[in-house]
Image (tube, rainbow, N blue to C red; front, top):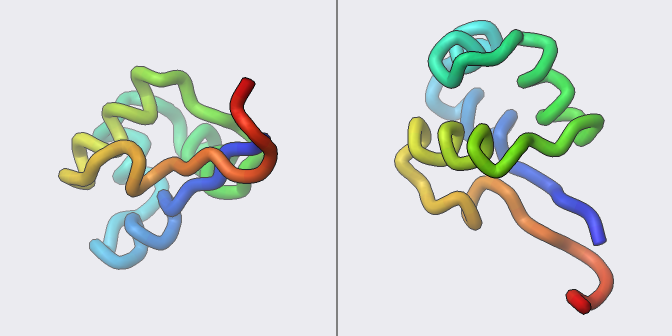
Length: 70
């Protein structure tokens, strides 16, 4: 299973830069870039902070795909 996200799409739709989102949620711009390019899965706390800022359920921003849960 893997985690996919819509962070870049949502961020760009609201006209926010990676740096602005990073500052809002308390991480570096490089962390936001790594999340958007699926090189890094955020902690639960960070995923919740991002979803909270977007005013969306975390499930609408981050999705688990492929395989079956055990």
